[in-house]
Image (tube, rainbow, N blue to C red; front, side):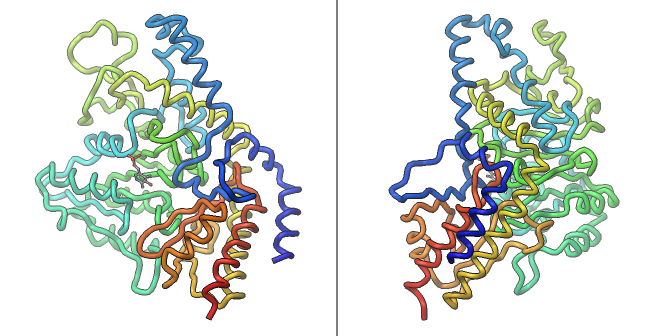
Length: 425
Ligand SMILES: *Cc1c(COP(=O)(O)O)cnc(C)c1O
């Protein structure tokens, strides 16, 4: 392992983003080195979050209700502070992005507008093994409209013996169901396998058949470069507490393509914060939406959830998505090489189910630990590794370019090696 240790130190020494690690708090562990590989589940706390929240606590104390207009960041328009920096990170125009509610809530609200099934076009195509919340959202939407989920929801599976889904199979499903297809709803990056999908290709294929396209970007936002506007995606939603490091349960992000900005007759569940800003406080009846994504807001902005996201987006702006992606590709490949080396060395039956093609993955590797059970996971965990265990036997790890180092990858390899030695046949 010594050669990997040297290589890691060299990469870290040349890494222009290495200092960003110091902008985050790492959890306390008994181990001498914390390997935090769960940024795909809950990102680390940026050290600037406290300052950003303190500003709002101060202004709340100082101004009371007047803070809506008098605060340093007036709460009346607080959400606007996030629009431009977030839009940059997902490849959108500022008016196409808004922050509100939580992810699953936003999926429902967007489906109210973008899933309007008819007797003939009512089907939804989605990935097999979508995140449970997405499955429940789709199923309950279909039932709400009076359709049968077994008929209306078409899941595309990996082929037998494969772990990831082929683009050609997604396109074949779209072709097969084209006459009944209302919506393609897909994850940008699958939470389980870490597969990054060809969102542009999926969007083109679905649009060619007249279907609407939406993406869940929970595992893609802040992880991989996105071009939502140029890809012509109709809508998307994501959470901000994973790669975006904005804290547990923090506010969700939403994208609605500019082409829908002024479509006032789209069905929607409306609230006062989505109402024409000029006339909002006249409290008139009859809903007059703000053009663009802001028109989907219901309630006034949750400032204390947005402040951490603002702190985090400032860090992302400094680092830049291009540089982050370049480091991410290197970091993930390095970790992959180490894991494969350790597996071979120990003749271990562990298998990476994440695609090895860098264009088909982000900052996650999923290790299928055939038959090792949870013992292997606990072994590395008690030595300072934060990873995620998914039944029946998958360990998910995410080397995050903002705060993980090449040394973290080496350290993970060393601990995995030590753990596997125990099981060596
Ligand atoms: C994390 C995640 C969620 C979580 O939804 P919340 O509403 O934020 O609790 C939903 N879908 C996907 C794909 C996820 O990865």
